[in-house]
Length: 270
Image (tube, rainbow, N blue to C red; front, side, top):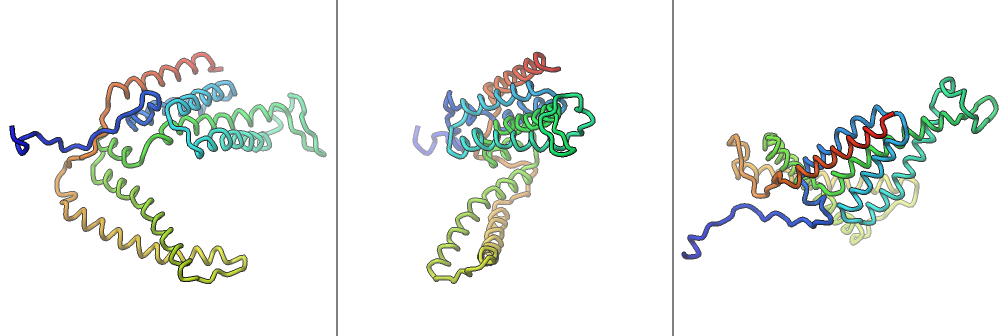
């Protein structure tokens, strides 16, 4: 058999997934669908034990299944606790004292009293919101926008016109970042004067807007011409070089997370 007659695989190779950092090998739809029922049901719970359990479960999945970067560590170990504290205190102050005036008074300032029941309600609400955010991180920390768009097209049969448009929009973000860096470097090379007053930062930002807008228009024209040259939208279906398949591991992940969520609700539902 000659080289010319060998079968050619038109699809890009699927990136291998680590058995430890398994979240990167799970289908994006599985990472979205598996925690969705728990996120919906957490809206209706009023105790603190249930959101604490789901917060711990979500953090465990993220710590085991995703690479720990500095940004992720800052988000999980600093931002989430601060968010719980701020929201818990805020909701405690907004709680109607008439509904909790039979509990112990924690703080009195003049005629205003902060009751322990208000703190309980406020921090239960803050923990509930933090648990929902932590469950959303399961998909957020290990999923790229293009893979999610491809999965929606390949598994949910979303029209490829919408999916490819989403992929093109995701590609705009890193390009804008590079163009902004180039514009800043050009300003420094040309020794652009920076106003030394409180309005200096807004003026500097406004100086970036026009070049970025011009670059965005040029890039959008090139993308439109490239899509038109490839007969984008001419046929009802279109092949995709990058496959995002639904595999057995995805079903196992969904079933296990749904089972864990059901067990926690069964054990902790008030």
